Image 1: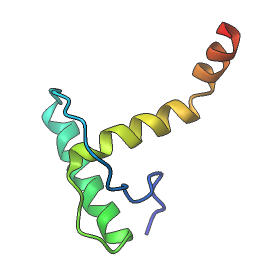
Image 2 (image 1 turned 135 degrees about the vertical axis):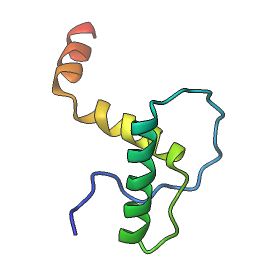
Image 3 (image 1 turned 30 degrees about the vertical axis):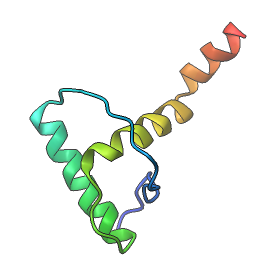
Image 4 (image 1 turned 60 degrees about the horizontal axis):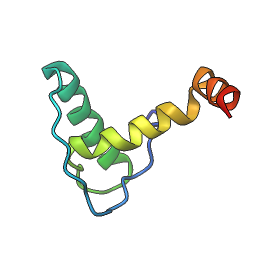
Length: 73
């Protein structure tokens, strides 16, 4: 089984955000949540809960962003 970039989602107090996603992206998030649940032996999490950790991971690994941010400091 492939190693996913996300770890199991921590159960933290959610913050409500209203957002429209393309249907294809929502299907992909749902599939990712199902696979993540299987890999971590947990029930699938709500696909919407994947958005924040995915964005955090994206920002944390974006070298161009890190370089630009260092230049702004």
